[in-house]
Length: 123
Image 1 (cartoon, one colour):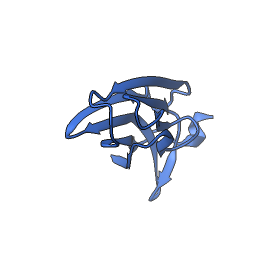
Image 2: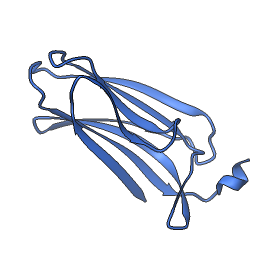
Image 3: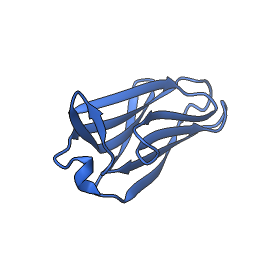
């Protein structure tokens, strides 16, 4: 199992936190520095593949995590199977009760597991 993660400090605008393809990614949007709303965008396609060290991996799940002064809130989206060609999408909202300041941090993860079906058998 491989997980890769990118963390960032939240500023106004759209940020891609982790990406495997145009169909498998974790992204984040924060309208401006005074807004208490944070939006997460999760997308996953089980049939995506990534070759690492001679082994093909597929995305088992994508995850977004907000860290607000040590309080963590996460949302995940799981693929149905490693051969699922349907793109699943989820939009989530997180509210910062403190409103002011750029103290909320956000990270995105894509959990990869070894694939039993190679890309050539998916066609």
